[in-house]
Image (cartoon, rainbow, N blue to C red; front, side):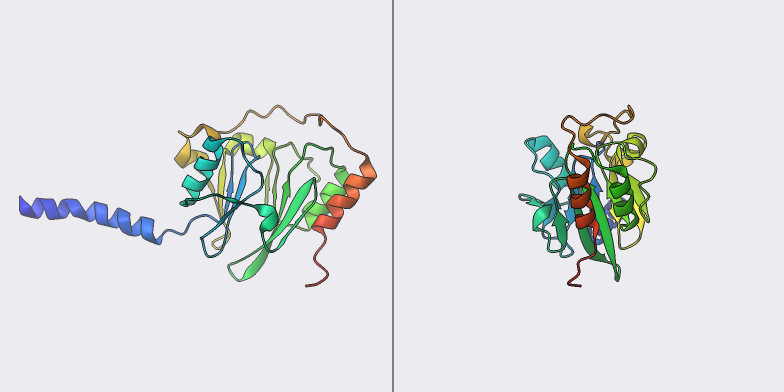
Length: 208
C-alpha cells in the first residue's frame, strides 16, 4: 500500500517539473486581435498593447502569462516606436532581433504604406482584416486568421506558434471570432498623414 502511494507521486512530480521548466510564451495574442501581451526577457513584467477597462481581459492575459500584478503599456517597451495607428516593437530573443507590427486604431490604413511596413517586420497583429498585400516575414495574425485559430502564444526562442484556443478554450476571451470580412473604419483619416505615420514607425531606427 505504501509502495502504491509512492508510485502515485510520480505523475504529480513530473507535472511539477514540467511547469517549473516550461518557459512562458514571449507574445500572447487574444482571439479578437485586440489584446497583445509581450513578456519581458526577465519574465518580471508583462507589456500590453492597450489599456483594458475589463478586469476579465486583463486577468486572463496575466494568468496565461503566469504572472501577477499590473501590466505595463507597450509604449514603455525600450525598443517600441508607436504612433496613434500602430506600434513597431523590436524584441531580442534566441540570438536575433524580431520586429513586430501591431495596429492600435480604427483609422483607415493606406494599403501601399501598410504593405511596405509589413515587409519590414516578422510578425503583424491586428484586430482588423488586413489585405493580402500585407506579407510579413513570418506571421500575420489578423481578424481573418485569428477567426480560425483563436488566440495565439508565440515562442520566439523556439520559433513556435501555439493556438491558445486549444488549451484555453474555456476562456471566452481567447475564443476565435467569426470572420465577417473587412469593415469600414468609423473614422477614416486622410491618406497622406496616416501613410507617413505608418512608414515612420516601421522604419529601422537610424540610431542603431
